[in-house]
Length: 365
Image 1 (tube, helix red, strand yellow):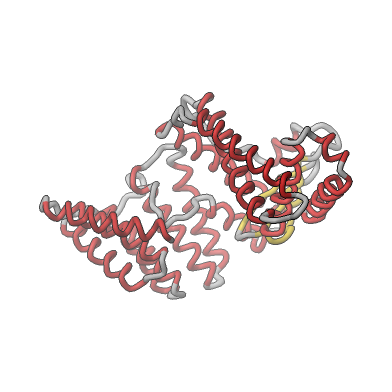
Image 2 (cartoon, one colour; image 1 turned 90 degrees about the vertical axis):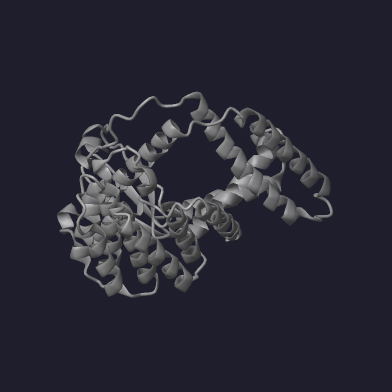
């Protein structure tokens, strides 16, 4: 929220500069993105006012795709407020007069909006069809980037369309096809996530500063580990230090991944179509199984694939799992920076805590 408020100030300054140049389009573009930020801050009325003003300018300049995106944003705001009919109307207006081949991401946004509105109205078969159309639009462009249409902030996660298809498959599809279809949409979500990451790296190659940052983060972590060991006796400030360590460990993991991607940047993406369950099952040795986890609507799901069948089931909320992983990671990180696993074995309390965190995670998953 703090970053959003700072962005609003910068957008206001940018709009003033564009007005001085007497260019009507750029102030309208700024208004559009300001409306997105205001919506994120819960300021619905000013967000709608700015979106409408931007839409009028885009319409006057015959920028039909931008008019469509404004309509989708208005529909998103309506959906936030529970006005489902208004959201459906906005989804319809957004694509009127446009060719899906020319504006696939506009149609994706509109169908995604339509699907969520229909699902909230409990029209599950119709919602499933809308989400399928949205997925088809997404798949039609593969990993090709589409300018502003792909960077829209009000579509928080394109992968959610596959999560919705997976969830609805578990409700409306025939029992004999339910699990395989759910597995298919899980695989599509993961394949799309990988394709988007690779496409992003094509146009935004990592900077060579990761090596210096990696060394800096490791140095900070080592200092905190030493401080925790020093304060272990009196237990003072331990909670605050552990919180700082978790933040740094997360950043360390991110920097390591960025470093690996930096060293192995992809050259192109040929295809991201996932394998169907039948092909996965046919490739498995006898009695072998693959276990995959997936998150949909803040719930953990697991897919267990064997040579004869696939089973998909809900495990429970994600928060307890994330907390168990954080606690386990902290315990293991202490061992890693104090002599490895042998250090844990030499401290009964440390070994017991690690086993307890592992058992908690095992029970959750």
